[in-house]
Image (cartoon, rainbow, N blue to C red; front, side):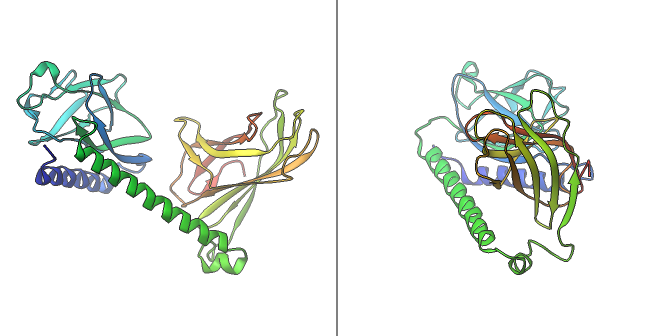
Length: 309
């Protein structure tokens, strides 16, 4: 049996309404980094679900459920907000130090085989909509996964188009025309080079930040104290508290692979929206060959202004 269209639309509308109410709340200054929709298939194991104190989570099933007979093993930490023929909406009342289990009986089935969900809270993700399927090969699940892949392809195509547009912007006139640089120009600040440990093999002896309207670029002068040529691979900013990562969208290096004792210049670019970042981060640049990474710690991003300037 497929999803009931009206039930699924009702649960989606409830989810969107909850998100809108949460976004308008004055307490919602710092949203989770990802609010996602997931497709899951029932199994004998408990299905993990990330919930939140701010954003409700809606479980939508491809079969009727006895939502009013759903059982939480701790009702002081999680509350059920709404029950539908095929859906259940809930939220956390506090941050969960350990998982809370939820058992949702299916209509016409024994309560002993009721699906079990393991509810947890996370700082970086919330499962706002979870579509629950009984059969991994069922047509509804296959259609949902196809729609998910189509959405990902569309997002990739949009990102590729943006990269092509940015790649065509090779000079100051193009930067202004594409609004990558506005009347505020590019703000340049020298950053304190990190204190070097005797065990560090990629030493930073100068660092700077270049901030424009839509991007921020970090530059570091480095020295290669390893016995092998060194060149950068992936790079990211990592939250010092949560470990959440923001991937760099471009990494450049000159020379390509300096030998032992040589110096080089690393340049790392990130997308940027002023006022949306807070907390302390560290810049990590992996070695392409799997060797020693380049790490610049203690960079506090607040309202577009890294600390240590």
